Amino acid sequence: MIKPRRESYNQANKPLEEPAEAVEFPILSQAKPSGPKKCLLALKAAPSHYAEDGCYFLEFDESDASEKQFLFFAKVLHWIGLRFDPRFSCGVTSLRFLWLSVIICVGIYSAVFDTLQMITNFEQKAAPSTLTFLVMAVQLVTVMLLMTFWQRHLSFEKFFHYYRHARDAEESYLELEKNASIVRNLRRFWTTQAYVLLTVASFSYVLTSSHRYDIIHSQHAKVFYFEKLVYIRPVACFIYCTVLNVALHTYICLSNAIYWEAKKFNVKLYSLKADSSAEMKFKLEHLIRLSARIHRTVRELDSIYKIYAFFTITLIIPSSLFVMLMVFSRKTAVEMAISMPAVLFCVYQYYGIMYPARLHDELNRSKAALCMNHHVWVPYEKSVNKLAQTLVMHVEQADLGISLWGFAIVTKPLILTTVSVLMTCLAFLLELRPRPGQAITASENQTISG
Image (tube, rainbow, N blue to C red):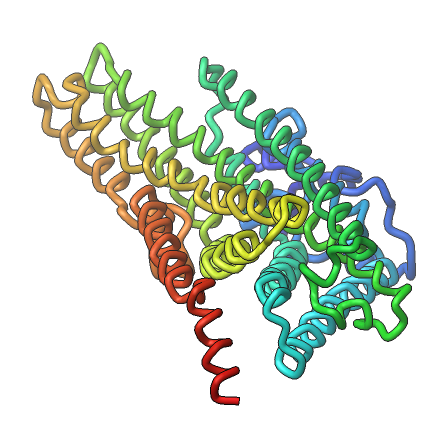
């Protein structure tokens, strides 16, 4: 007899007496699926919604602060029509794909239009802002496609499945610090979202102000042929930046969740001791299992965000350079004030993408924590020592963390490297900028030759 799958990870290790009844999980979206019966049955029976151990991927534990925060970010995506819940009907999913296609097409069309105008009708004043928009358009479209891919392939749900199995259920003083960090992440999200509104408002102001052609291209208003349709851009910009904001803070949320589990694990290593060798062996075996689960969760996190981290780091450097050039090329305080929001947004985005560096740092402390605990090694007992060495082999994995598509791990040295590259490129570009004296000499030579 084939055993039916079990919905809850809490039931995965319990003896199964009766077939589990169908359970509704209205967690990620308040909208209940509606549509053709055949389509709904296919959704409910999808084997991809279950893990190998029988856990139901779409079930979330709202008592955990990290999972609850993720559900909030999923709800924000639902508000702007870009949440792809696997329990949605085929009709709702198709409409959302249509809406996503419209938004992406608007961004790509605007970027192509600006590129052609910059090539055919070059304006030096508007060049930095145009280049900034082009780089950010590439980043925003990439993030939107990645967010859709993650949702369609249940990437977040699979991560939280592994996270729940790796989570330490014991109460600890670290829980308070973990909850405080989650609250700070939510505050940063709302602050950034308010900043997005400020940026969109300043963008809308530029479209109607007298400084319009000192910042943006003179053909900018004709992107949709009719000048009144130019305000489509600020609306699209708000949606793009909201998705980017959700993606960044979800990235911080997930890395923060497993960071605190790694920290709890290290605390256990520091305080590990036992009254007998049998008790020590039992605790070491438990830590080996816990270590394997934590590392599996980190690997899953890396599989989600390695492409996102790579593209973000790759595009942050040119976007930051173009934004700084845009600010330095402004002549009045009003123009500079209008350009400043983009600078602060780039700085914060760089901070967010480097946030998991502390996860890698915490994972690397595990070996030192175990080696410094003399209760494990003294007095010497062969079976205990063998288990301890096995645990050392488990925690000694230098490539654990979020990688840049496998090229490098997000670490603290990488932060200094990228900052130094950014400063070098900025100094080089500023050195190439024509000085006022050189501009006058060039104009005089042109007059004389004429």
